[in-house]
Length: 80
Image (cartoon, rainbow, N blue to C red):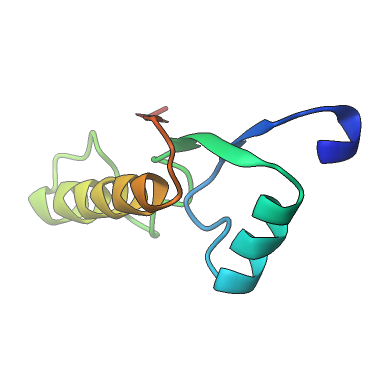
């Protein structure tokens, strides 16, 4: 992406999870603009589920995704 002239990337929650990968992205000049916080929901989890446990699992995933995104400097998160 950096070779194509991009400076900002949009990630999924599991991306840039290790310090080594974060350093590599930084060294390439790639900043995180946003995270698709609902990507990679655990099996059975759904934000629109009638099952309160499934909803709680999905909400916890989205919250953790937002925390991860904030730690990377992202200014936005979105849910699909």
